[in-house]
Image (cartoon, rainbow, N blue to C red; front, side, top):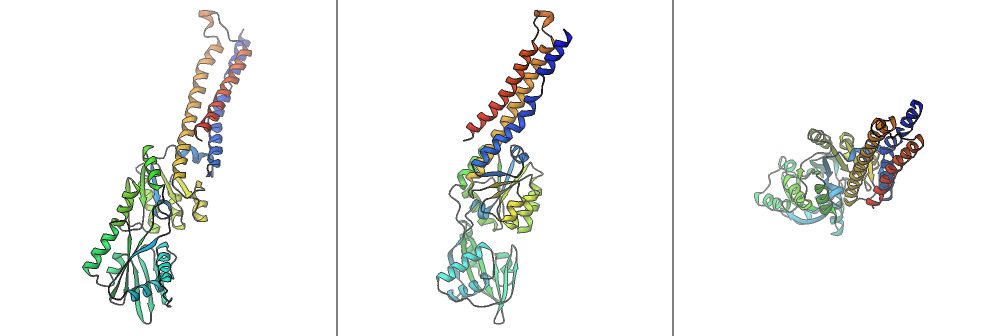
Length: 366
């Protein structure tokens, strides 16, 4: 009698269901993610995503297309003088905004003039010397420290910033040459994807080096919860550190200057169009460059985590009921004893139910 009860308990309590609950759900989630262009560096990344409360998005190349164009030219005097100086300075820079100015100057058929002593100050601007004259280019705070800026030109630049354009100031010696406004168009699906993330209860933060007015205008269009403007490339990591005090943070970026912030976040996500360093640092890579892929990723993670919880719940319920019955708890009251062969069948069914629930989750994620 005791031997039969011991065998029944041993068989029915085999921890297959508990052992399969998490790995099978994660394996299925990884498979679904691979088909959708979502690649995980490790299995824990998928499980960790389900606990994310805050998502920090880099603006350029993530929310926007990352290919800005010149929209307005506001000269403080001669237009061609402004464009020639801007072309000479920006041709030396690798910044996306610089490429927009260079492309515009080429369209105007302007010649490229040489400069000396070129220097780039990340997050501020550029400087160089041309024919003995010091040239400056950059944001308002940078250029204001070099030359006086007419009130009417600053007001016009502020109006452009208020509609999401980035004003770039250019100066030569002690004279302001003018302002060139550049705008980076938003990706078609960004606003919709951000709205879906917010429905999942995620707090969406946009990080950008733009001034506050421009950043708020773009943030309003995108529908983010919070805008952090004026962030220097090496300051993103500090922002992520501060956000982590409020909850679990996922950082989404695509550039070399995002690598430190990606490494600091609880979960790091690189967009498919990003640099090799960003993808190497990130725990997750999205093959697509649009934010709809990020939305699909979070739906996948939440569904996978829910499946894990369901599997663990039913596996525990099974053991809580089956083990006492196999031990003979009903025998004094009903005379019922669980046959060891039936116990083996129940053990198999418990494992089958966990695997089936995990496989069904794949159908729910298509």
